[in-house]
Image 1 (cartoon, rainbow, N blue to C red):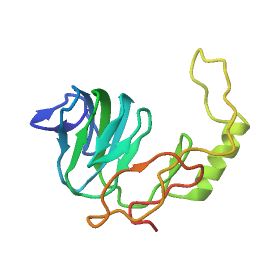
Image 2: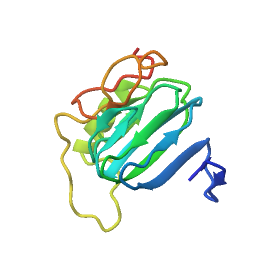
Image 3: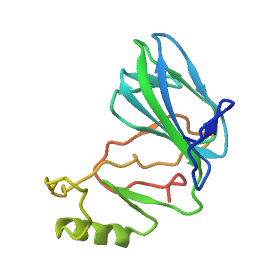
Length: 163
């Protein structure tokens, strides 16, 4: 989906966005370009290093600055790269809920627990809301602070500005 590396997907999107499915051999390198976008990398199988920092398989890394990043899989890996234009306003994420307002996420949590959110046709299982959910690790990320932040801590996420 989206465009990059001289290619363009036929899938229409309402904003500049991209999704890549990348397979890398052991020792290969894949460079993500600098730009005014936000990026995340998800190693589906195989551990990675992003700019020399380890990223374990099945942990999403958010790259929150605009510098190029080099991905290397020591033993080979399949990964997903997704991203797009930076959003104009800060967003908060808790579990499957994302909003520009924390109070809206609290309402979504209550709606989920009360099963007021629509169901997937044919799906019968209800997954109860947990007490915590993954988030982007807090911190300020910019040209002076390199490296990925991993989705791992059980609380609210921080914006790219750390506000």
